[in-house]
Length: 311
Image 1 (tube, rainbow, N blue to C red):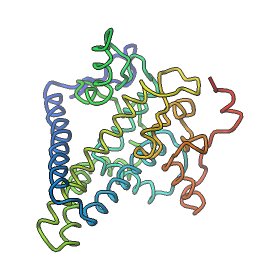
Image 2: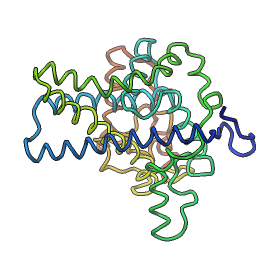
Image 3: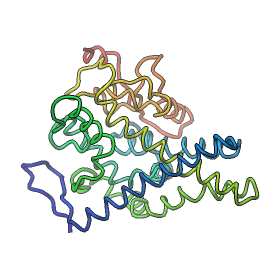
Image 4: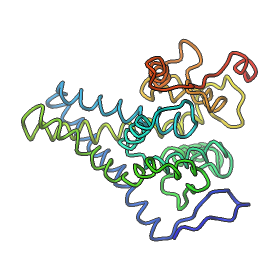
């Protein structure tokens, strides 16, 4: 059984048994090595046979669905309460986020709320600025920990401490328990669609490589780059008690998550792109859903708040 550490250390931090740690590390290796191998295979096929319209559409469709499930669902809605949604939409957002294979909704939210509570301080699960050592080697160690290494740490975030609201929600708790099912579907549905569209086993194989493995590999590293790159490189237009930065290079592929200094300055805002030139696809989708009556009470940042926190 995992045990909650004494409160004076880091509130809501759990330490795992050796058996749990071994299982966790095997699973992390599986979800990192398998998509990478698939990505390499997909690139080899791209070099030889090109990318079919069907494979491109399947990969892009699942990337957008699972990516927005993370950015709009897991992050801006479940973690920060940036807007209100109906029960059906809540469930859909949780399932779409699960398709990203970044953990179940409650575990993801627990880690991210802990990240904000201790951003770049002791207790932050994935800061690149803790115990990284001096010089270039220290920078590399810090970035590695923030990007991927933290997933191997023998500790976790207590859902009872960080996400009690979600634990009390019977629908979200059920979706959370069914995470293995969503993971299996995330891997298999692209292949099934590829088979139906092309009426061939080879069409299923290539759709699996692009729509499952390559898509998951790319989305993982985009999300992890917010943890690493966006706490190290970029601009800091707003005052915040951490090292969060804005990085425009990642803005489109991360659906607006790389306006990270904006987000840490105003964490409850559903819109992260605060200027016209700051592309924020997730914010645009949320505002569009608001206009369609699908969500309500969308939280925004006022001009007065922006002026007060400018560096």
